[in-house]
Image (tube, rainbow, N blue to C red):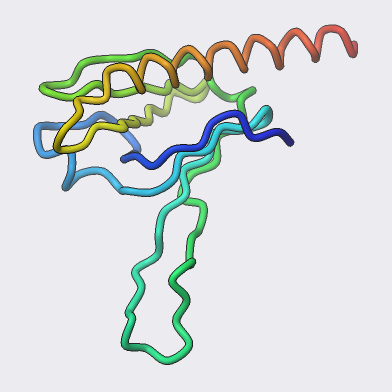
Length: 128
């Protein structure tokens, strides 16, 4: 498994509304040659004994073979990447923050996801 993309960002299942920072989960977005993963930071109490500041867990894992398409889309003031799966689920991702609307990052990520899907499909055809 090869890591192709790694970024901090917001993600959620479904579409995003106007209050995107409250509707979405902040975490890591990882794209490998096998899957797209959204990794959420766990709620950490720094007053607990033995708590770890590196406590992450996978919130969503989407195999590339299950993704129908990915595209960049402007939702209000931010740009998102919309992921549509073959079983009709929708996921939204944005790398926007208070200073940046995420346009460049969303276009880059959607292009990379689509290119990786095509590359994976071509490799599978060659192996048949």
